[in-house]
Amino acid sequence: MITDTVKKSVVDNYGKLAKSSQNKLFSKLFACCNPAENAKLVGEKIGYSSEELNSVPEGANLGVGCGNPSALATINEGETVIDLGSGAGFDAFLVAPIVGENGKVIGVDLSDDMLKLARKNAVIGTYKNTEFVKGDIEDLPLDDQIADHVISNCVINLSNNKGAVYQEAYRILKPGGKISISDIILEKELPDFVKNSLAGHLACVSGAEKIEDYIGYVEAAGFKDIKIESKSSFPLEFMLTDPNVMKLAKELDFSLDSAEAKDIASRVSSISLSAVK
Image (cartoon, rainbow, N blue to C red):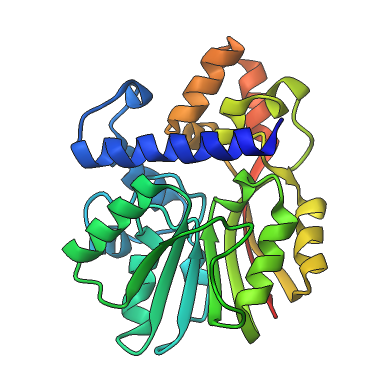
């Protein structure tokens, strides 16, 4: 699968998601479900409290995460936090009150539509210590050693160059800085017909890699004290809330309650990982 094609498709797809959340009309992309309700349901199941979910502007939580990275990070007042693949700003807005007026949260995203939505949400929520910049997580538009923490939620799996992402995270962190990442990994290899599916990649499935390979990228970047803070199965009912999974099922011509679909879902897990520079 050509990397540039995947990257463009990811940007286009998440742009559609951002636009859909703003106009509140259900496009064909979301014909299966109510995005707002599903976003809240998924948020609760992957570790966000009701208080967290209710504390951010409506439309900031798009329900496309797979964990709660900010919960793992020992973030302190006055620190600088970088959110890789910040989307509509959900995790950035949760971190903003923690770092306070002397701290800063910088969200990085490649989708103009997501950046527009995040900036709009920042104004609605009067978050004065957040900034959202356009950039590729494989080549961050940020200076060396500016961050105390780097967080990311179910985004790095979309990259076909995960090693570069972790090298960039290492570069922008101060000595002693930390990463707190939630992501998707594989318990065992996926069938080729899923791995080669663009819809599968956009659904965070075919872009996932086995856990030993994933940790290898973190180690190669130079990180120490690498810990898998949690690991859980990524149940089929979670995947049912993702319109890209529905698209994948249609593309592959099988029912999501079929034995084949359940087998594929059983191969996917969600992890929360931390490490130190």
